[in-house]
Image (tube, rainbow, N blue to C red; front, side):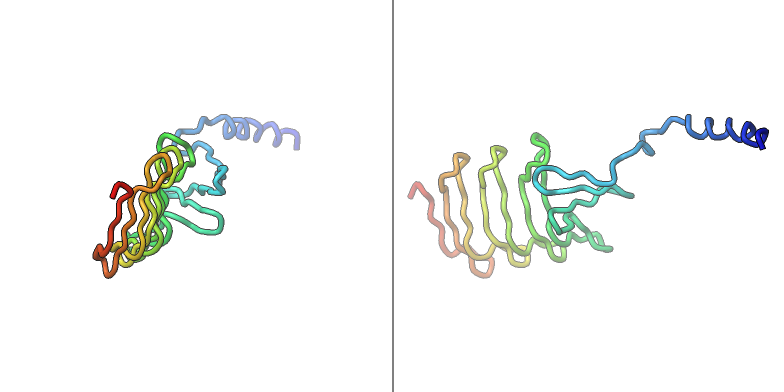
Length: 146
């Protein structure tokens, strides 16, 4: 029995000493940041979760579906832009922010076209412009300088 132990001991050490390549290096199964978002690493690109919602999904045809979130490259975890997609078209609430976190624009899309009220802001947070759309057409616009 003791001989069998010594026979397999080198195999155990040899298997444990192998260096990991960058492709197989350990990544945590999930990462959570201060914005209540998480990333899960798997085959292909990571899946992103925001609270209870999976974001940045494409269907089998490669079309965008659901919430899409664009994170800032300068500030880790900072949401620069978010929109809801259906059948690869923006359809629902849309919001974009300046790098300082102030809302730049917010509004609604319907089947890829602007709909309803849109509000634009300056970088200091003051209102810049208000627009109203019906059936994808601009019907009213008022600038703060008017």
